[in-house]
Length: 137
Image (cartoon, rainbow, N blue to C red):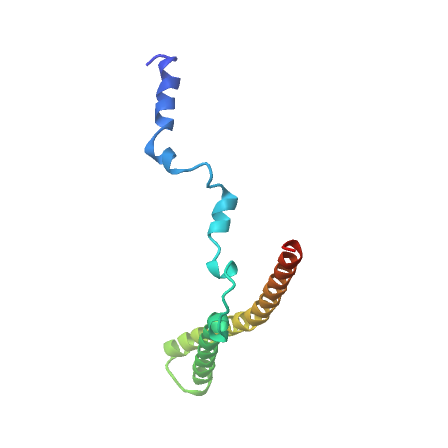
């Protein structure tokens, strides 16, 4: 293979099927925009359950795991068990406690974030309606 044939071989490889799949219009910003959920762009009213479903589920699961961790930890310190099972319970109990508490707090923090987003969306829709009212006269 000569030095002149090498660049031509590279040009042929650049037009492979993999490079045809990557469209020039799919930049990082357009992929980021297309990855957003449609609910951000639609203005259909949603019920409270649809809005708060995920935080409620996260809080419920977190609370259940927290209670399970409390029970396991209490059993580890109150029951007279074998040495090995006592070590396991003393390690697993606090792990479930911390995991449950973390999930519960994440759900509790998520609710005000959703409320703030709903207020911003309502303001945005109001200003869009106001703008269209004055521009369409």
